[in-house]
Length: 422
Ligand SMILES: Cc1cc2nc3c(=O)[nH]c(=O)nc-3n(C[C@H](O)[C@H](O)[C@H](O)COP(=O)(O)OP(=O)(O)OC[C@H]3O[C@@H](n4cnc5c(N)ncnc54)[C@H](O)[C@@H]3O)c2cc1C
Image (cartoon, rainbow, N blue to C red; front, side):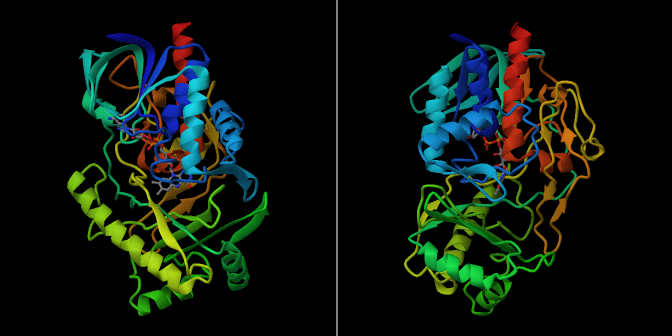
């Protein structure tokens, strides 16, 4: 039986930040990750860019170290209004290994946290299981950074009730073999108003982004093409519900697609394996149709091919774990400040909907901060929560789930544990 200061369940967005800062500050730290690389949504679900938010530099040490490390592999660019968060997900796997190794954070891959030994309100150890080992690991403190709050579910920590419709999930993918020069020339001419299209040349590489949705909140230059695609029977309406395309640093001729949004006959519960599986099969069919559509309608895509389909479903929200405090939409909109805040941000409340014209992006009039009590479990005295499963209501989570905020939450947990251990 090994004993740690902090054991982190899940080496995703929040988990890696916690692991890096904890180990760097001298804590004996372990990350248990069920995949074979770190990064979670960033790497496995192919999610980028990290949304730009006015962080006021609060708990941003990990984010900066990550960007610096990724830059060593040419896997990061700064683009679109100075957003530093454009990552290459494959190179992020290498950079994260290297970064955590430098500070001495231990990692066990391919191992899932499946059980725990607890005594009333205290967690003593976790049980992890992989193909080759089943191990009990003791620690003074634990962090649930599993995204879905899987560790809290094992512990029967209180889960906050959900009164809202689920937000749609997305299975992201990459297309390669694109003539980006041809595509960008066409796109810049086609979207003359540049409502949502951006394009730049950085370090000799073309970088661009564009989007189109079925919502009528903006003039989407690409919409007539999607309408035509529907008429021609290449795609269906659901395929056209949400479309976003970006280039990826150090992947010339490749674009990342933040779609398809998975729309079934009813909301998919991200915690129900049967309906999620149906959703994944649906998504891969959608990916094929969207690819055929792009190949047929986008100049520059003639010789393109699907080069990657994410091996992790993009889930915007599932369990929210009850902490010592529950952060609400009202707290967020009021711009309340806190002593020693977990994070500072201005990212809007971004709620995706299954229905046409129903997604909302509510901008705040003031920046907001978050108190450390939302990272502390309501039921266990040595358990923390960070990432998208943090203790918030539905709407506040829709603002706080972005990567920069998840990094800050992980970092704040590490600093809190360091403080507690003196
Ligand atoms: C489609 C989509 C698009 C998005 N777009 C953006 C965007 O453009 N910009 C942005 O900033 N944010 C975006 N987000 C939000 C953001 O990416 C996520 O909310 C955030 O990365 C979640 O971080 P996390 O640490 O909570 O979880 P994750 O990063 O998902 O990490 C959880 C980790 O826990 C591991 N795990 C789970 N259970 C166990 C277990 N039992 N044992 C061991 N390991 C376990 C998983 O394998 C994973 O590595 C998007 C989200 C989605 C779904």
